Amino acid sequence: MAAKKNDWKNREGVVYSTSNDFDYQYQQQEEAETLPKQQQNLIVKLDKSMRAGKQVTLVVGFVGNTTDLESLGKLLKTKCGVGGSVKDGEVIIQGDHRDKIVAVLQKEGYKAKRGN
Image (cartoon, rainbow, N blue to C red; front, side):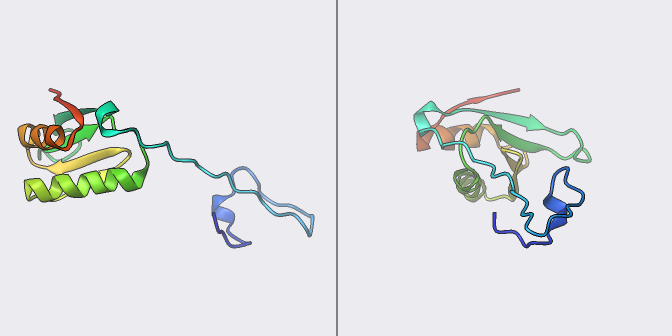
């Protein structure tokens, strides 16, 4: 992580140091290695909670790095023709598109099943 010397907001637990040659070591978060498509166990489910009554389709269970998850989210948004996002390891697609998303994922080679 290339951080500025005075980037104090990312320092966990260090308030102040009197040493002139003190250099804070930032923790590197390693991303998980992306599993092959055949080993992914994706669950496609419908969610309305905390969304003002609007329905969204969630794809959960992806194991891998965020770049691969974002490319999967882009593929699903394109195939469904709707908007969405990728947050907290989940793909969020606007509307109820569970059957279509399961079909697209299985066609791409993922192990996917419909949740609730």
